[in-house]
Image 1 (cartoon, rainbow over the protein chains, first blue to last red):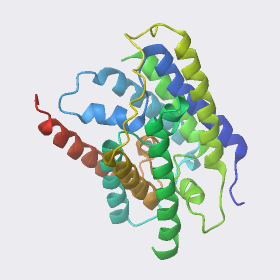
Image 2 (cartoon, rainbow over the protein chains, first blue to last red):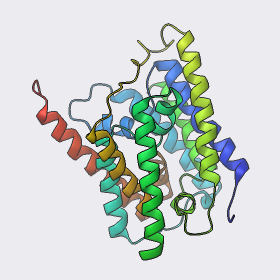
Image 3 (cartoon, chains in turn orange, brown):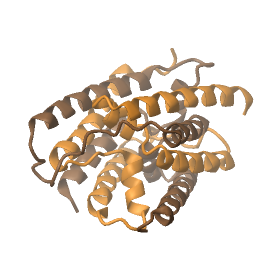
Image 4 (spheres, rainbow over the protein chains, first blue to last red):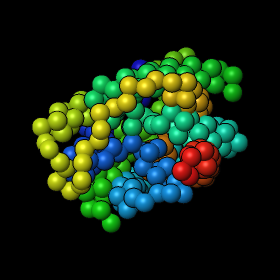
Length: 139
Length: 140
C-alpha cells in the first residue's frame, strides 16, 4: 500500500471527532460541515454566529498548516477545473438533498446509530468508490 | 464569535489537515479501488467515529448543554428517495474530485484555484436547494 499513513490518520481522526464533540457537548449542535455551511447561505438563517465561528476556527488552523507546512495541501486538483466545478455542484446539491455529508451522516449520525445516516453513509461511500474507480480508469 | 464553536472548528481543521483529508489525491487514493489502495481514510473515519460514539454516550448523561439550549432530538427514522438520491449525488461528486465539504472549505487557505472553484460550485449547489426548499415551504 502506497502512501499509507496510519499514525496521521488516527491522530487526525481523533481531532476531527473532538472538534465535533466540543460543539455537540458544549452547545448541543450537530457539527456536520455541509449543514453548517448551508445554514450560512440559507436565506432565512437566524443562527449564523456559531456556524461562522466554526468555519473561522477551521480555516485559521488550516492557514497555520499552510504557513508551517505547505505540503499539507495538494498543489493542484486531480482533474481539470471543469470537472472539479461539476463535482462541486453535485456535492452541494447532494449534501442538501441527502441532508448531510461525511461529517454529519458519517460521523455524527453513525455515532448515534441513526438509520438514516447509516443508509446515507453506505450510499455515498459506495457510489464514491465506484465513481472514483471508474474515473481513474476513464478520465 | 462563539468561542466553543471556534475551538471545535480549530480541532476539526487540525484533524483534516493532519489526516490528509484536505488532499484530494489522498482521498482518491482511498476511494479508487483500482489503483494502489491507500487505507488511511478508513482509519480516519474509524477513529473519529469512536470519538463520536463516546460523545453521544456523554450527551445521553447530560440534561442540557452547558453553552446551549438543548441537545438534538432523536434521529428521524424516515428513509426516503430524497435521502438516498441525495447521498448518491454527493457520492458521485466526492468520487469525481475527492473533495468533501469540510476539507474543501479548509483547503481554501492553500490558495489553490481548484479548491476555490470547487467551493464556489458547492455553495451554488447548496444555495439552489435551500432556495427551492424555502419557496416550497407553505408558510415560506
